[in-house]
Image 1 (cartoon, rainbow, N blue to C red):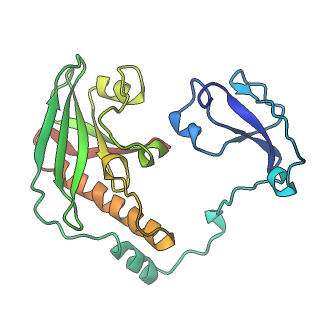
Image 2: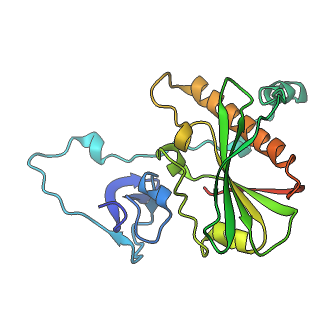
Amino acid sequence: MAGNVREWCWNDAGGKRYILGGAWGEPRYLYLTPNAAPPWDRSATNGFRCARYNNPLPEPLAAPALAACRDYSKETPVTDAVFQIYQNLYAYDRVALDAKIDAVDDSSEYWRKEKVSFSAAYGNERVLAHVFLPKNASPPYQVVIEFPGGWGLFVDSSENLYITSNDVEGSIIRSGRAVVYPVLKGTFERRVKGGPSGPNTARERVIQRTKDLGRIIDYLATRPDIDAQKIVYYGFS
C-alpha cells in the first residue's frame, strides 16, 4: 500500500505521531524514511489502516519511538590541529582519471545525456556519472552536481533517473545549466551488498563518497565544455 496514502501509527514521536509509507505526490524517499506529524494534521494524503489483534499487543510495540537526533550546535569544536587530522582522511592522490564516455542518449529535445566513468581515488574501481548537457545554451556550461536521495541506497541501477522536463533537475537543465548525477560508492550500481557493517564501515563509506565527489570535480575540470569555476552542489534530501 506504500505510495497510496501515508498511514497513521499509534506510536508517539515527541508529541507527534508516526505516519509512514509515503503518499502520492510525495518524494519517493518517504517510502522508507521515518516521518511524523502533529496528530491533528488533516492533510489529504493522510490515511490509516484498520487492524484487529487476536491478543493484546506487547507493551513495547505501542511505546513512544523517539528517533535519536544529535544536536551539533551543542558540540564543542575540536582544535585546528585535530580538525586537520580529520580533514586529511578525505585527501587522495590525483592519479590518472582514465575517463571514458560509455554511452550517449540524444533522444531528449532538451538535453544530451552522457554516461561517463573514470578511475576512483581508492581501490581498482570506476566512478560512474550521468552528465546532462542542455541543448538551449552554449558551452562552457555552469554545472549542478546532485547528491541522490535515500532511494539511491536501495536501487540497483541508475539508468532510469526519472528526470523529466518539469521536475527540479529538468528545470535546471532547461535553464541552460548542466546537471551531473553521480553514482557514488554504495549507491545504485555501486551498492555494497553483504560484508562488514558498523560505525567504522559507515565512516569509510562517507570518506569514499567524498573522494568520489572530488574525482567528479577533477573530471569536469578536464572538459572544455564545462565551466569548472562555477559548480554547485545540490543535495536532494
